[in-house]
Image 1 (tube, rainbow, N blue to C red):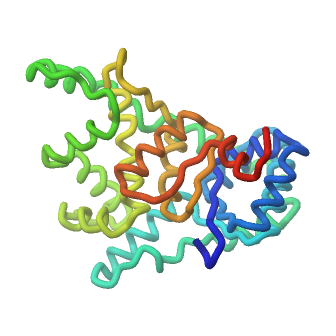
Image 2: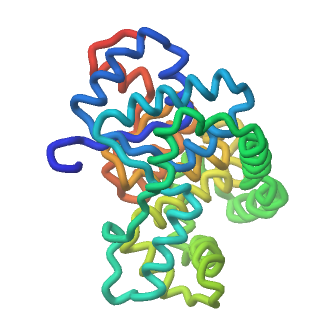
Length: 292
């Protein structure tokens, strides 16, 4: 919370729903501006810019400006946010505090205020291509891994896990080398160093945004390579849905209109030990006594 204001962040799907509901959204906008602090996720802003229809983009950023008229701020895109956290730890691990690392995106806050911000077609096209490539990440690498993991379960006479939490717990209890390898990859991508396991374990412990991201990257591992396809709970969230995990520690309420993302991020919040409440758009609106 910031003072007495609970902090709320919208996924891109919630921004779209707010616009799609038209006049029915007025009580929601009024409620947010009067009783909540709105934290824009930089990744959502990038996705809104990528919207291909200029009229729809205009409506989306008009809505963002209305949200901005209440207490609000914007956080960096997910990759830059994690970069700042990693650099903060790399440069001074002894005094590192994730809450004091500046991840505010002031340039974006000022840009949203500009009614012409959405209008650059070339920027929109470039962002659309970038987002399209990003959505292809995360699943392909696990397709070839599935036969290997399934054969291990069979060799030990065990069933495949049917939910994410016992699957990730089992991975951790077996030494967690895959977990630390993912954490090291994110760390080394920023620092260009050959990080040791102890360093990333410590960052995982003290930096919730980094911890949430690492756990989120194992949702496709569970969904594609580990779970029993017949009885296992499906967690089919896209890459961008999962990159939104970095914003969870920065808000009290994370709102999405995507059921798959909602389920996946709830699992991430539990295993990463976050207090964030993951809400469907309908559930969030119900708090304002509005039927949508």
